Amino acid sequence: MKRFCLYIIILYNMCLLTGCRDSVVPPERLPRAEAERTVIVYLLGDNTLYTQVRQDTIEMVKGKNLIPEDVNFIIYLDDKAHTPAIYELSAKKGLQLWKQCNEELCSTDAETMLKTLQGIEHYFPARHYGITFWSHATGWTPRRNTFGKDETHSKPATMSEMEIPVLRDVLSRLPKFDYIFFDACFMQCIEVAYELRNVTSYMVGSPAEIPGPGAPYDKVISALCKGDAKGIVEGYDSGYPGTYNYYYYPGVLLSCIDCSQLDALAEATGRLLTPFYMEHAEPSADGFQAYCSFLNKYTYYFDMRTTMCRLLSEDDYTAWMELFDKAVPLRKLSSSNTWFASFCSDPTVRDPECYGGVSMFVPMEKYNNYGWNEDFQKTSWYAVTGWQRTGW
Image (tube, rainbow, N blue to C red):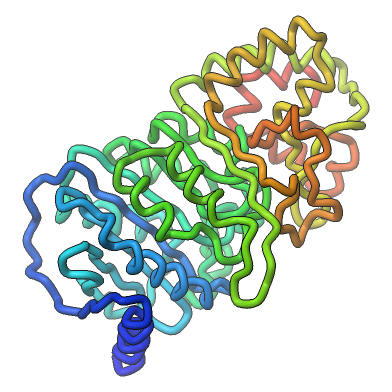
């Protein structure tokens, strides 16, 4: 508890440097009157990102004056040094501790996440909900910290990550979200979006790795509170290129997905794409835009639009793009055409005109040694697009 108090004192002092004067006063534990919106930020920093947790929390405090009175802004924070805690942030009262857990929890455990989110929604009811998931992530790829990583929990290591179908099942037991914002690497892939299409209206994130500092929360907090998915993209993009803690980050790749359009996109993609892979064929991947090149860790995460552009005829591509534009109404490419990367040997968007901002898996023989083709067969996207007909 002393360490926790010291943490809050440090946070308080750092807030003073930005002009904030926030105190930690436990509020009464009574359900609030229904608000217009409850914004939940699920900060999972019980891992190598623990140094970034404090900085992003400070950015949220810095932007607190942009939180409207009819919005609940709730932060769930799990870091290396403390047991998980829930905070409420408001323009009037600043950052307040609402609940401190008396034991360590695994924040990627389905039961823990569900109880936490159900508790927040019970005590902070609203007509609309938005949620941010902040941590390590690897898109749809299983067995690789798919979402989150909780390193200090006492359960077996297999409990330290949450795979996308499990996340879907947790969120399906909650009111539908206006948006899900993944401030985490590789999450803006079509396989994740399709899995979560019924639990959120919009999904915001990056198809590639994101900069270590993540989103500039003082710049996105207004959009989070308004439920403005496109505004989240614009605010995030405005923070890059940039230098944080003396390290230069060249850019970030972002997009916004309208989940209501994904069934139509899935039908067209399957109908137009799978003929190239029939009878276990493997077309050349020359010209495909890869967001990763470390096969022992992840798949290549090819850009979806660029892949379709390379394979389809002009007429088919034009027809497909009408649906893609509806499903991905906003995609942001960094001004430098590059992004921060540890797992890509060439983090450059080579064909900006075909940049789609959403990744897609395509099977290849060389993936067999890593199990990616077999894992792909377990996704809902594989089933709905008819990949089973191809022999892959």
